[in-house]
Image (cartoon, rainbow, N blue to C red; front, side, top):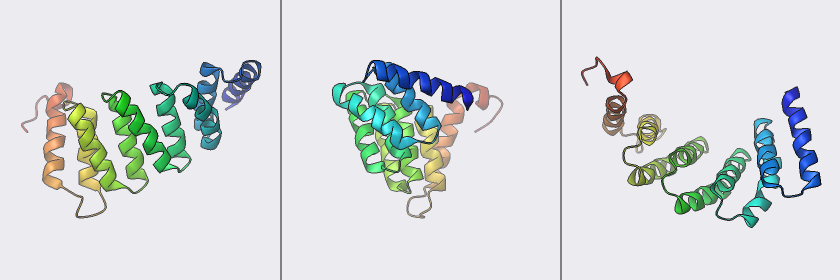
Length: 168
């Protein structure tokens, strides 16, 4: 924590010298997220987002900060904007769906994963995340055991190190 605090102080000084410095502001926002200070991260990244509306790193960092601050609807708008710019961001689809699930929005998480899989049909990450969501969703109407099992089996088959020696 001492190193993070010292690093944050250096980044704050850099921002004082050059307000709106992209790299310093982004790095400080990540430190603030790590320190469980998401609103501080949002305050650092929102101005950057207005200046750089098509920068995916900024959009995704802002979405993470907004989600961590409990502002899921705002975060979802940022994730949507990000995948509209570049739909093959596997980690964004997975992160967005995980945040939706954590917010208790399981149907939305499933829909996000299904949409992501239309863009990245071979994504083992999205298949595995969807399998988990379908197997563990709290509502019986959302749980789809047979589909979850089929997805999990596809993930195992796609990962030779895990699939060797197993007759699935």
